Length: 437
Image (cartoon, rainbow, N blue to C red; front, side, top):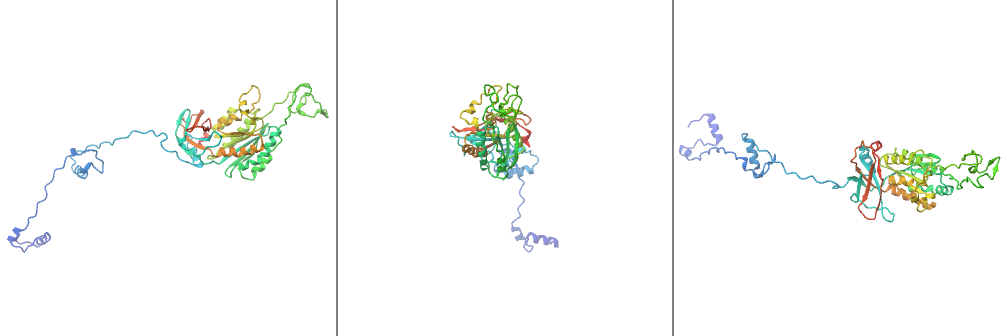
């Protein structure tokens, strides 16, 4: 056999020995033929779903390659994985534990989030610590709401002190002596504004740091003598003017005729009514508090006997404003309102007479607290106790189901799943544009 140069090179490349004899060539092992093509398996024997990229069962790779190579056989649709029933997610996850600043930011973004400070006390009047979100239930308009955020962290306070200067002189002397203890009840993170009222309201100081030197100076300047204890007499032998000086009565309270504080004819004197503009004072303090930033507890602290007469604002109007701006009213009741049972007697109001005590209405509507104290020591202790209660409340935040465009009153009910505990929170709120600032 003769091969060309190209054929010899190809034979050498394929491993042929060109020097073999014809008999040796005949005995050499023949090259096997190529394997015959195999028919593809049908997909009918595949059980279970076919997952893209994974295939089905043990024939995953073979079935995937076969189906990709033979376009004539259609690929059956993948069966859907079984779905699970939706679970009731009510209170299944713990709410986020946020700080005061974080909660303020959240409420700043969405007006439907409602913040509810809650005070929990035992049968002895002591604050109960150690509760978590599982112990609380919150209802708005009798519908239970999910607690979205919960914290027991202390809050910084924005306190507007409202001091009644229309109380009697003996009570005013005790209040004056106790004012030095106000600053000791607050922390450097708190801020204070001071208001006074009698026949009208005065803002003595805007908000400033609670531990600044400005606060004791302002408190020293608001001290006054108070009202006289004596009651003018309108009839009887003392109704006239027994002592005169320069043609006039020495005591202007019993001066007949037209004089300062009295009116009438020369024989009959009309005794002026007492003026206690408590509503106007709380309203002025609330307007100042409404501008304080979120993340602070807004508190009006009233030192008064709770009497009201002569205000332009009504109790209903002021409560509406307080509930719309998340302001709570706390009070130390002095004078006639500090006696045992006075708060219950004051609930009965005779027509055309002065309200003996309206403070309990503000306190109940806003979730505040009150102390009744007669002595200087008790008044001083009440400052620290009430400031502690306002700062260390539980804070619950939930999302209201009501529309943000609905401005109607929304009732709130907070309950604790433990016996023998007293829960104090605001009755409800009015949604306001101020809540979504």
